[in-house]
Image (cartoon, rainbow, N blue to C red; front, top):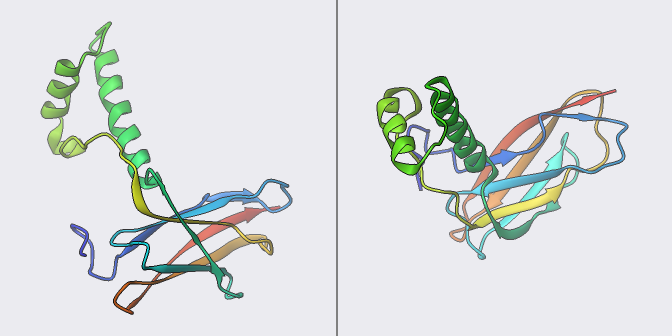
Length: 155
């Protein structure tokens, strides 16, 4: 699989909070969208070079796609409000999307469930500052793909 406008090595995105409170009691979930994943794949996560932890596969909506969809919907609503439209029906929304296609890109379909998502809780052991979350995916062909992202832990 090759994502459009991305290098061939881009095989997954990691969704995690950008910032957490190091002393907070709540746990935070890390969700990985392994684009060409299936039940025959295995994903693992680790924090700051620590031990690898297995991630659980589940079916749901991809967080990055949900955020993108919400931003496009917000943009259309703000344009409608700026035009003082009292109602935003489908035809008007499509007309606004068409007018601003060079800015927002083509309209995207409604979010749908997918089964190429994995999750695990962000492990304990965050240090103040930036913490490295690494994900390793073993695909059904025996290839290993890696991705990383940082989570900032405030005092």
